[in-house]
Image (cartoon, rainbow, N blue to C red; front, side, top):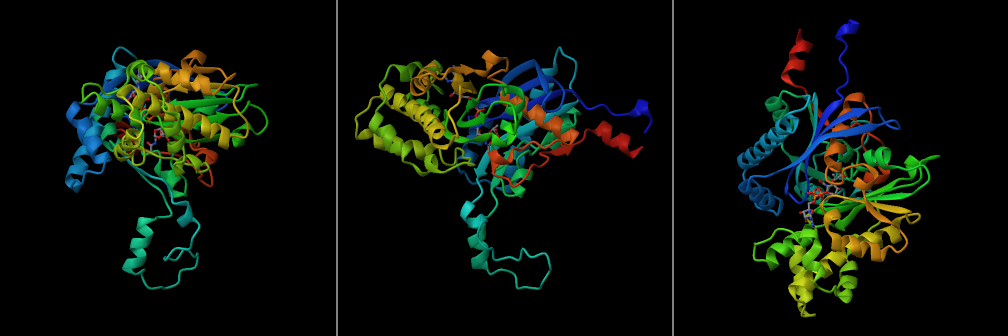
Length: 428
Ligand SMILES: Nc1ncnc2c1ncn2[C@@H]1O[C@H](COP(=O)(O)OP(=O)(O)OP(=O)(O)O)[C@@H](O)[C@H]1O
Ligand SMILES: CC(=O)N[C@H]1[C@@H]2OC[C@@H](O2)[C@@H](O)[C@@H]1O[C@H](C)C(=O)O
């Protein structure tokens, strides 16, 4: 290739994600330089674009198990891609345009790998030498597909359509490569956290509180610090709280702004202790979860349990907030090699002042700040991370951390959908 024709690695990148709260599309326009240890990201613009109300309702219904036809699945996949593409267009207005998009899409289903099955022999042949054997019986197939050795995670909003609509090369479907080798495919942000938020002397927990909570413990940055990182989904973040607020306000509110409603109640500690007995909180990492577990059914069970204590609405919210805080701290004390010297919060839950105060109470002598306070946007960190993951994908740098996802090795994450312009250039 002639030197003047050399294609520069895109450095102006858009990251897009809608998380488990399904509140809207977070878009971050960033300027990236460096690669890993010298990685630098400047946030040029960040915005959240709320979903059209009817699309949000459909996503939540599908995520909660509504049966739909294949045609409807294709339709909703493309509807999400179109609003993501529009978010990408909007975030560039008034700025130099981007040449790459990293789009996480919208998770509508997440089933972690079945550890038990992963270690068991399967009814199909895994041997390297091909030997003719009968196809598995229907019973065996049903057994395996009900407890597949591989996880399954579905993110809608196909990258091909985003690339087509925006004309910008788009990387999407980040979770599948990790899942294909036996990982959970989540959490994926910790590798980016490691390079953007590690400290030379200080062990830090980066705690995202979205619909679901997840933590990345990052030891001080020396020696083999990278292999000592631990990360997992801590359990409910705001998912149960949001559902409870909607229920208790008869649909008038969708979340507990600043945690004010919960702050006017009193947490019921025996109930929190009872809820903490739940299996997920005792499962050792790597582990991941979603609204499939901490969703509507779970909330209804919590509300039933609460009846025995005759709690009012504020007490119920205080108790659910306490579950989020206590499950986070319980998981640090149970699974971390050592407690962090600092906790940095991000995600919408970092704005819940009552939740933050409960975390501070449960973590005496450990400062609890937000990532904003160390220079990385708490609102847009996940979107920023998917911009970096797309950038790494083009550079051939792996995006997963095996200690976080449980995958046996590092892999390149994401499928690349080139824009029409670069496809035409290759054909010339
Ligand atoms: N001012 C606020 N006070 C209290 N809670 C807030 C506030 N702002 C946002 N939230 C909470 O944050 C949630 C959205 O957080 P976020 O956008 O980080 O979640 P997400 O990215 O969808 O989830 P995940 O990280 O699990 O994928 C809202 O649903 C709400 O519960
Ligand atoms: C399957 C899925 O979308 N998981 C999300 C979810 O939201 C928080 C937590 O559960 C986390 O593991 C993950 O997201 C972030 C972006 C991650 O992969 O790091």
